[in-house]
Structures are given as structure tokens and as C-alpha cells.
Amino acid sequence: MSGFESTAQETAPLDSLTRAFYSDANAPGLVVGTLNGVDQQVRAYGVASYEDSTQVHEDTQFEIGSITKVFVGLLLAQQVESNAVELRDPVDAYLPDSVDVPTANDASIELIHLATHSAGLPRLPDNLAPANRFNPYGDYTEDKLYAYLSEARLASPPGTSYVYSNLGTGLLGTALAQHADTTLAAALHQHILGPLQLDRTVLPAPTDSVPSNLAVGYDMFGAPTPYWYFDALAGAGALRSTPADMLRFLRAQLDPEATPLADALRATHNVQYQQAGGPTLGIGWHIQTLADGTPFYWHNGGTGGFRSFAGFSLEHNTALLILVNKAVPLQSFNAFAFECARLLARTRADS
Image (cartoon, rainbow, N blue to C red; front, side):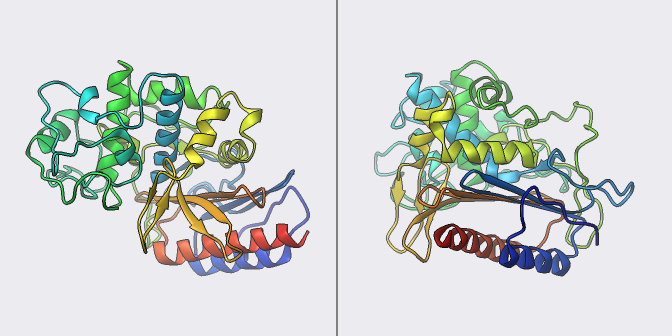
């Protein structure tokens, strides 16, 4: 077990919880970042790579997996604010004319349905058959996506039922890029990453060189695993980022007015979907109610060798980031993340 670093005085309950999780998970490296009012803390344990024992730190790059969906949601909101698209636009308006997008009960899939997992699409397309199971999205092209859509049937009318869908958010990213006549990587850089000064957050291509600050990902057994790359479904989980960039991104959620994307950021916080007995969502963000009745906005992520969590409370002015370079069990990871969120909110409320 390696050392612990913090930029501010430790908060005992959260520190104890973090140390216990790091030990139990037997993870190579773990970073827990918190925002509590103006205070920022970065707790860094372990290594980015067993091979060279490089310590994890605030500029270590991790695959953030499905947290990418929040960035795509923000891109959608930004495009709405710039009058390029509307939330209720049908997605087929932004795809080639040859693509036959499925409908149900005469209802079309709209952009907001894709951002809220309510389009009636499944988690994954049934023609996803990767040549390399360790890089499951790398060869899923636009042609395959369009072929799937032209044959697909929706499980429910759009806007009526929640089914978490990598396919849906991947389709949203592709549609936004098509409409802008560019790539999703370029659109995110121009409209989101650049304006927010997230210089270490990237959507990589397989041909890119591996940066020296990129952590090695390890599977649940502790063996190194290949990095994931994406094609047509990049919006589902392709981004890599660092603790420093992600905390800057979370700071932007708490203080939108300090950024050039204030209107778009606020728009992603507005409730767009609610299901009785089920989830509540903004644009990209899931919204969960804390014990004190206040909303907590969150998303997690996972790839073959990484787990991630980002969340924030507007009422408590707090935010939480967790990055680990091991495919730890999602159930225990999520339980750890939400317990951290509760502790952070309680600490703020007591201060």
C-alpha cells in the first residue's frame, strides 16, 4: 500500500472510509477528490502502474467510461443554447436519409430521450460482436449502428420508460457530430473541453500515442487489461480525464457563472425525466435524493480496467470524484461512492 496525499486537513470519517475501501479493493491506485465550499482535497493512494510504481496524482489520466455521457449531455445543452438543435428534435433529422430510425405508437426518438435513457432502445445493439472482447466497442462503426437502427424495434414508446442504454447515448453523440459535420472528439473539444479549460481530457483514437500520464488499467483479478477505444458509440464511454480536470468540471457544476457555459450547465441540472418508483434524470445526470431530502447529481463509469464516479450537491456546495485503475466490483464501488457522498454532505451541513 502506498502513501496518502491531501491538499487540506483530513476529514476523519471520509479518510477512514477511503482507506478501508482501498485496502479491501486491493486496487493499484485510487484517487478521491472532494469539493466542500472553497476547499478542495485530493486523496491519492497507490500507483498508476505496478510495472514502474508511478504514484497516482492529480494529473494521472484515467478512463472515465460512462461519465462521458455527462459531457455528451452538456454538449447537447450547449447546442440547444446556441440554437443549433432543440431537445425535442427527432434524432433521424440528424442522420443520413438512408437510416430508418424505429418508432413506437407513432412516437419518434427525440434527442432528449437519448440523453435520459428513455428512447426505448436496449442497453446494447444486438449486432455488437467485437472482434476483440477486450476492446468491445472499437470496431462498432456507423454502418453497423445504422444497420441496427433500420431493423430495430423499440421496447416501449419513446419517453415512457427508462432503460439504461449505451446505445442511446452513443447514438446521441454520433447525431450531434453528424449535425455539426465533424467528429464527436472535435465537437467536445470545441464546445465543452476547450471553454472549460479541461486540457487533459481527451477522446482518444487507436492511432494516438499512449500518454506518459495514463494509468494502466487492471481487471478484477489484478491483470493489466487493454485500453478501450470507441467508434460510433464513443458518446457512451470514450473519454479519459485526470483528477484535476474532473474537479474543475465539478467546480463548474457548482459555480456555472464562473464559466462561459453557464446556461448550458444549468440546463443539464433541470429534471427532464421522472419515473414513478424509478430514476430521475437531468440531461446526462442521474438525480438521487440524499437523506436530508436534497438532490444529488451523479454518474459512474466502468471500462475493462477502470471505475469512476462523479457527483455533486448544489444545496451543500459539495462535489465528489472517485477514480480507480482496477475493475473493482460495481456494487461495492457504488456503495463506497454513495457513502462518501453522504459523509461529505453531512460534513458540510455540520460546518
